[in-house]
Length: 433
Image 1 (cartoon, helix red, strand yellow):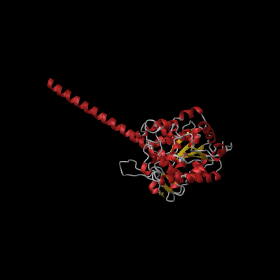
Image 2 (spheres, helix red, strand yellow):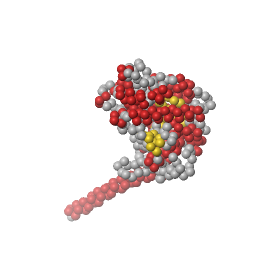
Image 3 (cartoon, one colour):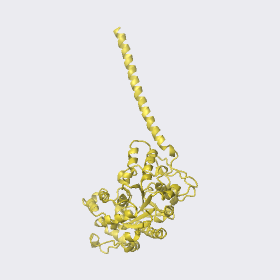
């Protein structure tokens, strides 16, 4: 009898154990189902991805109407490694600003596109015809060969410049779900790049709620901010003209920096695919040609759109930071807050290459405008001076005649010309308030 009871109890225990295991499996399956449902529900709106419909105007109606709603749009245009990340923090990290960091990065990681639809490399200096088929593609999983368009259903009549300009117009319209494939993990969800206005997006994606759902929450933030700023590195100034035509409140700040400093910074920037062998005359010539193109196109835009194109020089900005920012922010209708500016002045420096010595980071942080002069190779300086002499004369940069003068920071390599004084350029009026 006792033996039979023992067997019965053993059977009951086994059944209970199986039931617990089954319940655990069911719980896991239910959890996975809920996560999948939330992800799908978060992307229902754009199940085919971002869309540019056939025949749709390049500049959306919502973008055009935004200028009547008391909103202001700002583009910070610059070359790679010109100090734009540091400058962009002042123009985009404030409480009244929505900031979008490099929206075209996925289209052309190390290239820029000219107003004539040429795609030029910032690594080797070569230019070629840009094509949408080449630019409008990415791999969702780098380990697989499967590719997707960044923007879906692109009109056959669109040029590469049209495509890139349409992306910017959607940002100013706060239509972020439609460009979801242009938003990069590790970039647009990182506070040091995009600032506080993306906090709600970071919190949302940390809960695995789906990118589209999180972007819709971010769209609400974008819509409420009085100023929307885009940092733009991959278009020349002339390509931005359609945006100026569409929105009378759009202003463009173009940042210049000494080309010698740019080349040197690229050599020592983490992940930048540039080596000593690639620091050729062609690369430097390409950079200075782009700077000249930006200058000439910017001058033309300034004539057609008065008081809306402003040239800023990184060297002058850092030497007179609070004075220049107070004028610049007033022009852009951004509230100037000295405490916030003070918090944002901390220089973010890459790790020092071991061969550069222990003072590399310290020197860079103490004088971020001129630190390159303590480390740059003299032969590189001479080559750059030779191929960039024309843009030097236009912008106010100076050749360094002797090697002994390179590290003598009392010798100025930049003199701000009167025509580039912010007060003279801005001519701030009250008709845009």
